[in-house]
Image (cartoon, rainbow, N blue to C red):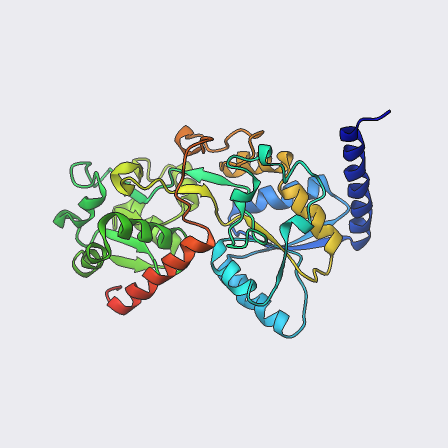
Length: 358
């Protein structure tokens, strides 16, 4: 007689096949996700290989670009999307009040996904919303850089710790990705305020002639050419592309306790968190997508292509820097979930009142 475990395994696989057959009849899954080339390659290419008979319509857009569009559509009773891959802010804050997202657990078919033993810190640690239901990050990372410095033009004696940002030698030489916008810059600006205090941060903006920009490419250009050899809050994808072309070879990360003090930011998060929509037009394809996205095979492929790290314990880190991998049992300061984002928004409101950004 078959064991209970074998029967349970057979039951979910039967359900999987039923949903997959229905998804094939729908024929498409409509997804908005990160615009980065490597991320798009991993997601679109991975899905097409896994499910060639279910087309993926992928719109590459940051959450700040897609969320307002979806809110307007839903207010007009238009339901055009199945999946969103984005960051906590503004996704959670815009979608939860209008009940746009369905519970992640309602999409799960493979029971191994929700098993705590599958994930570093357990399954629930990946939820970005306060209710632990709607928006989920399978990725996990630590040791993200505060920013970058070009050692071709800035010596370690000039900038070797967070307090050195006030070094008079750096006046006019710092570019800062707009901290009033969602993203890595706002998170790091918050960490700086926790380590050094808001008054210190305000004074920094008032007296160091910092250039604030929303153009990641421009800031990276300034960084590698020594025009603005210190760049705060930018993601590293553009820099990686330039370094492959031989530029910015002596650019270093500003990372570690010298820049974050006793705070250990990290854990679940990132712009690849997933939500699926209530009233998704292709609900079966959406369920297949959620299960596939959280599966071992995709998580490993994504980690390898994007050089990121999954929280799944059965995957190997994709980031070649071992210090970026989460360690089971270590306590991390989550700076990406809804609770943290509330505090970041409060700081952003204070910064706007200061009137110091140029």
